[in-house]
Amino acid sequence: MMNTQSSLFTPLGLETAPEMSRPFLQNIQKGFKFIPNLFGVFANSPVLLEGYLGLEKTFDKGSLSAVERQIVLLAASVENSCGYCTAAHSTVLKAFMHVPAEVVSAVRSSQPVTDPKLNALVALTKEIVSQRGHVRTQVMESFLAAGYQKEQVLEVLIGVALKTMSNYLDHISPTELDQAFQSEA
Image (spheres, rainbow, N blue to C red):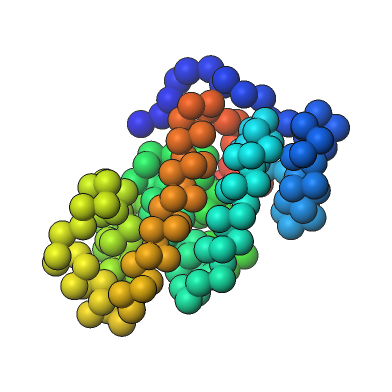
């Protein structure tokens, strides 16, 4: 479901962001080679921007692979109906992590992923989001049977928390999709 309301916040850049947001935006610009609009919206609140980036940094330290982490972020974004984040994570998975288009498409269209382990990861992520953490025993057992450890459930929870912040921010203040992500709109 797309939000048709107007944007509450404008994406900010290095010159217009609050002083406390600028170092974070500089690092984002180094990583992406530009400042994605959603991070520009985050910059309106240095506290939210720092909190998001800090949690993202912690998420990256976990035992899930980089691809698995991006799959969690994509699945949560799809479940939360966030077009901006769905396009951004689809772009990262395909263009930078070389994940097959069929895998990304399956996650986006709520179809089974051919890799049973990734399929269990997607199912758990979507269940956490859609059921607000009330995960059915069958979904949890399938996740563990696929080869994940029970502690990794908690890592998925961090990814869901990240996407709750960014997806909900995009719902509150719809953000124009950057040219870099347009092909996955």
